[in-house]
Length: 433
Figure 1: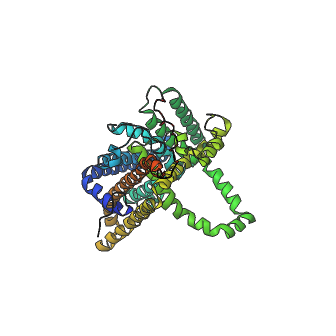
Figure 2: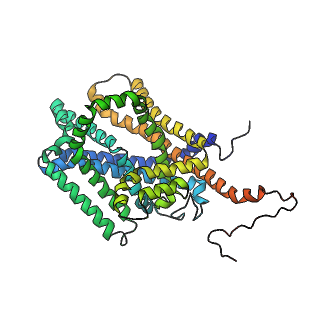
Figure 3: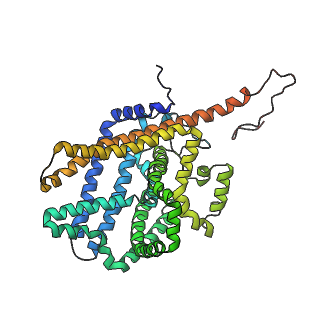
């Protein structure tokens, strides 16, 4: 039986395992550092939240913002640490229509963090992934409150995330202040600190979004209650109920995997900052560019569509990459990527069953260690699978791009009498005769 070619989707599991074996030490190191930082942030947030005053009300939201920053940093560090094992990173070209590269091979990790910070945060917040951090903080605070104060301490700690409701004016003021700081940073520091501005704006974006979400959450809740109470909503759910049921798994397994693939590319040096490059020069891309008014920066239509573009352009760019590379590599990646999440939950339950029944206090001491062990294994596999999938997709895209100029003369028929090859214009950027 012949071994699959280097660009076959069948090699994806083996390529991910090879990366995991080769870079196991740095990946485990960065994951451990991230877990320690997350533990410290949640412990500090719990201690501040248990105090009295304004700081106690703000502490939980700021803690969630720190957790998002830690997730961003650790993700960039882990993906960046496997770049030496990717062929397409070493063979990349400085230009290209669909696969332009922003940096050279010697980019430091700080530059990667600054470049990937803003698209990562926009994706993270737009898709509501910060809710996972909020649940983790609430669970950790409740566990610590139970250990220190029993059931009463657990109830008080579980309500920390709602403490800001007593200070709505403070939440609105912080939202406005963080927005002003974000605008000032983009306006005054973009030229002075080109490498650090991305990370700084991302940090301000996180906290602005979190306080903004909290500020408008009660209005959103009222609007949702009003809409779901209308008769038309019952009719809509009756007609489109199956689609609503399919959307969450499709969003996580397909669209989420697609955007993670693009974010991995940005971390590794892919240039996705130019919206015109992301949209492409095709008919659909030109129509989307006109609809979003990207050629008229800061116009009313451009400002109104900016949030929508920031949420969906990575998915559009990923679709273009997948279309060029073929559907099978991406389908294989989606299946494996979703399977790792299922496998992580199943393996954690298996560990619980192997350990057997114990007292609640015993479990509260050892649950973090069990979560760390299973999380380490599967996060390393996820990062390596992400890097291997990006390597495979880019290799197939590059091969198809390289085959285009070769295929044109091959398709000609010089044996036909009177045939003359048509004159071709010079390549873009080449001097004209």
